[in-house]
Amino acid sequence: MMEKYEELLRKKADIEAKLEEARAREIADTKVTVKVKDLISPFNLKPQDFFGTKAVRRVGKSGGKVEPKFRNPATSETWAGRCKAPRWIQDQDRTKFLIK
Image (cartoon, rainbow, N blue to C red; front, top):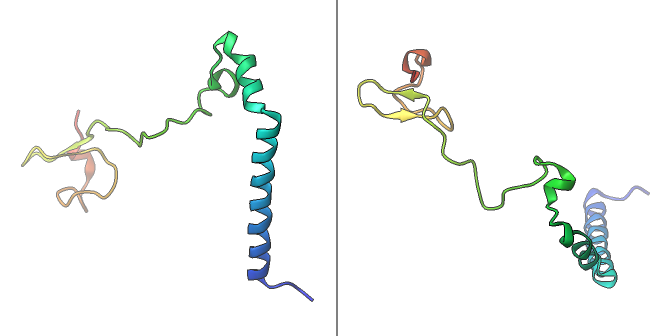
């Protein structure tokens, strides 16, 4: 008999929980992180030395501020071209609003 989808999802969740427990236990038992830190600390190595710069995530930073690309000539209001377009530029040719 075929197992139902919900039952399989529960089994998947149980297996994922067991995997994470086993991973945490093995890391704690072997003290992998301590060994790695001891090996790399004399050389002052960083994650990008191993994984390149694209693999390193900046935690806590989102997007950041972007220079405006469009300006409303009537009000000098600007828009960077991200998110929803303001009313003054909607349904119009955006090239005439480009900041040069």
